[in-house]
Amino acid sequence: MDFSPTPEMVEASALAAQIFGDYGTSDNLRTIDALGDRFDAALWAALGDAGLLGLAIPEENGGAGLGILEIGAVLTEQGRTLGAVPLATHVAASLALAEFGYRPEAPGAGVARATEVFAQNELTRA
Image (cartoon, rainbow, N blue to C red; front, side, top):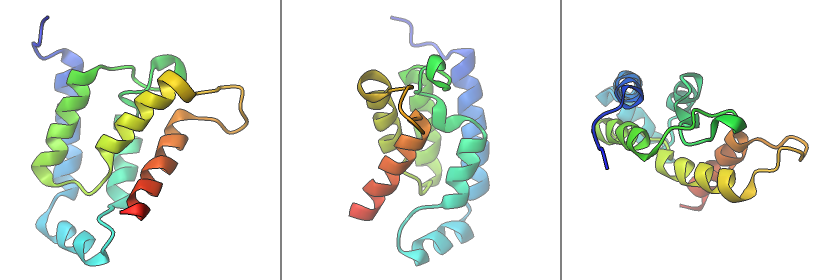
């Protein structure tokens, strides 16, 4: 098994590092901590706009269809900056929905939207 960095892994990691770095400033983290819910909505939106929330979602379902190495690289960048978003939960939910629960024929169905709802519910239970 080859664990050498893929071009996609390097690209995803660099993009994640830039975004998490932009939102991982001490001032921003203090502001998020003061809110009490540890969820940075602006960071979540930036990750979505950059396509990083769809890394684990298969291409046929509108995602990037990348593997665990690329996902791990993005999660590593999140950890470096303490990014206040439920990315690991989102990835797990994305993989589960893509494998077992995605029904494109259902009205309003979308893996990205479903995982967003799942992640938000996970935060409110904590």
